Image (cartoon, rainbow, N blue to C red; front, side, top):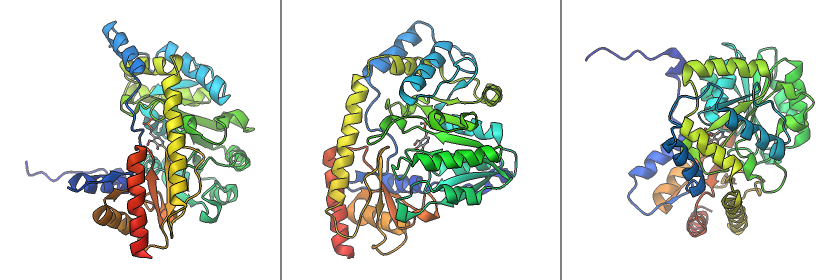
Length: 390
Ligand code: PLP
């Protein structure tokens, strides 16, 4: 057919993610590579979780579920939130189970953002937030945090960027790409301002299960305006369940009700088999989860200590998540050029900092979701590059 494709204006300016660019270059590369660009746990889903899902499928859990998710899954999520995050939600009216945290984020935006509204995104931040705000017809507004402050949340900067056009502020703590667990007082101040503007705080807490120094308390547990907080979380990171696509959104009853209605006409419900996997993950034996957590913590310490020995590069010790944000500003070139050089000449794949907002220029995101041997090899190669560059 020779008919030219008609692409909707809404998505015309969508750019390929820079992490994806590095992934594709790595796939084409033929040499021996150390992969440090990945954004998911390198562990397989623990066997008892897989078995829980398979047993449920064999027993007939192969049908649509209610739009908001199976009642027992919602109850397990509400219990988890109360026990681990100190956030209390009614599983019947304040919770919807989604296809990954990503769908929860999109549904939250579709529910509270009008076309043309601003969605504020502190950066460096996960690139999908801008893409999703755009899909919802809103204007993504990057609010750069300060490198001097190791990119901690600076409430003044966010509040200065707010106006009557602000419909939502996205906070991701611990943060991808910095691993930073944001300061609570700053979060509190941002939430107060969000309430003043009748906006919403969309709290992406997907790395909450991987906080090493600090607590896993959810934002909605300690701010003065929990009714303005929409909490997003899921099973992907903590339970090594990225492929199951299981997340949730919790918050104000009216917003959740609206979200559930949107969910009904987008995907209807999260996969029933995955919901049963989540049920096992949340209510079953936690020892394998604790083992994975310990491994991540050891890797984090190894990576940070090894980086401290390499001249010309630096990073703070992240309090959570699976990344370090490496300052490579003493190297020549843009972060994309540095990432490509590191890949082509030294065989290490990383994500360029500029992929997380302009303020990430001069940085590389390294994931420690890889074995200690691979991490050591990758960091030896980065040291080699540092010696050649400086
Ligand atoms: N939020 C952040 C900050 C992430 O890094 C990711 C995945 O990389 C997600 C959300 C997506 O999570 P899920 O797999 O549950 O959709």
